[in-house]
Length: 317
Figure: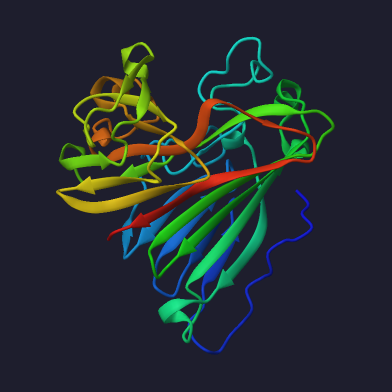
């Protein structure tokens, strides 16, 4: 996918250690002088690893397909242009569940870095990786199912000082007619023990409970404890940040950027058993999905318009 302003390549420096970027065999790996790292598959532009302070922050199924044969179970898959099974009589009706972004081959557009804070004198402390997808790159089936001219740029920024990962999706309408879309960053976060976790920051929010026949409820408690299957779509959230707390200590803060919806999901015992690519079967004990997005209704883009949204996740390790 062409872009007029691609990020500038990393420039060599003798002032101190520099970030490294390595791209081969369908994946891009970036590492900071701190040792923090991120790994992204070109298939789906799916983030499959984010390590800070030597520990993995994401959960990926041991049975996940990383060869481009099917969407990855785990990491951070991109949902676009529809969330869940598409509705009938809509422009996305012919698409598969969660759309085509997570099952398309993206182009790596390049990297850029910045210096700030304590590492400014000794090397770069953040690195941004950009990936692109356009209509021309879709499979023939996807082109027929969604024949609109579009451009996606997905920016993944690894920050060392604050131990952050920022993932932003920019959507542009490059055609001559308007169209609608939904998007979601389907983040699987790793935890040591889900029974010792709480999800904070969703109190008083309205949610649709897919476990209870898509009925609507209001979150009556400030914290959510995962004690069984959870599949909730929280909408119009007033707080900017949702946090995962484990053993009473902050583990991860997920800040929505220009987004007001989030999904909380854990398959628990029976649902995990029914998914062939979910391994180990008791892996539900070590993960929880907190997924930022725009999924309550549809975003409309007129010709030439651009939309952007995403998240900044901070690790407390």
